[in-house]
Image (cartoon, rainbow, N blue to C red; front, side):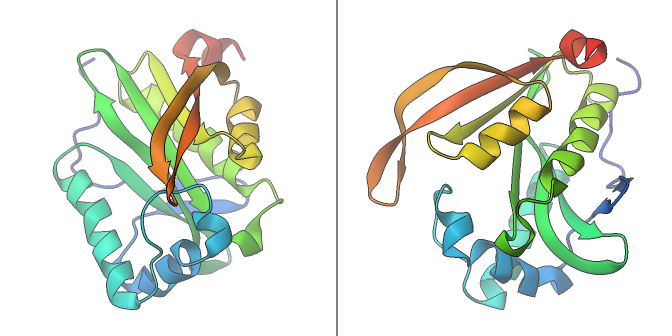
Length: 188
């Protein structure tokens, strides 16, 4: 565990079609596009991001977790365009119990192309290689079939449902919990 990531820099990750990079305040319009979209927000708690100032505040919030060595949230871009089309990363890094949770979101104009599975495959591999984790967890609101599909394609196993776990959009919702162990990732 000597080579655990030390948060000295935010690494750039690349896949066949995507680049995962730091999100800067210049990406505020993209935050409005992503988090201001009712289709994206349907399964997320919180208020939509409707102004560039709210977008910059969200970017500062992401950066604050990096500065505290708690999380990384990458901006997802296509190789030939610097516009952020989504975000992804890890949070809730529990160093003592060696697990982390993942999260992701994508502008609805880019749904159905496999971008999130491609991006998260890189993130999951990076987490196992650089965080010393034994387990990666993810959850999604019951009914969020696209998010569930991403996790299943990556080898995550359904582990159960937390009934009425979160208050979203004026109602309690169930959360489906998924997990992936390092040996399953390496054996997959």
